[in-house]
Image (cartoon, rainbow, N blue to C red; front, side, top):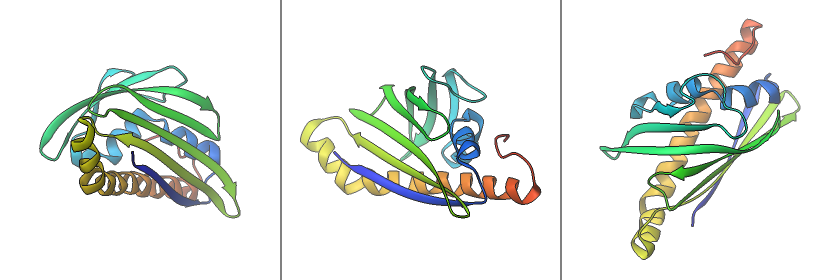
Length: 161
């Protein structure tokens, strides 16, 4: 089962701003607009909280997917976890960590996932999904960091999309 760990430094931003924007359904959809990602069930706008679910619809590899995720841990403003409760993965768990560091916040993503279908799924994990998910999360994080840094430069709050 692949385990991704990505670090993104966000200059000038606080853990609270990073935490809030990372939990924004609207920011998630905007950051992954290239895949047509949109919320179609559960919480479909605003900021997620502990126990909330959201069902996403997106197109990846030219195939439409639906995934329902739940916020299963919530320790504002330093950590939350979302996990798939229904969808294409045999397992999806994504931990988000936010730590104040000199000059800003370090966002850390730890994603554990597995494709279905046993040995075939493990091959897909290694040959395709690990690289694809890394690129997807990096793209999302770059969008978040740009949005947050821009808000800091404008002297405003970063939580709004």
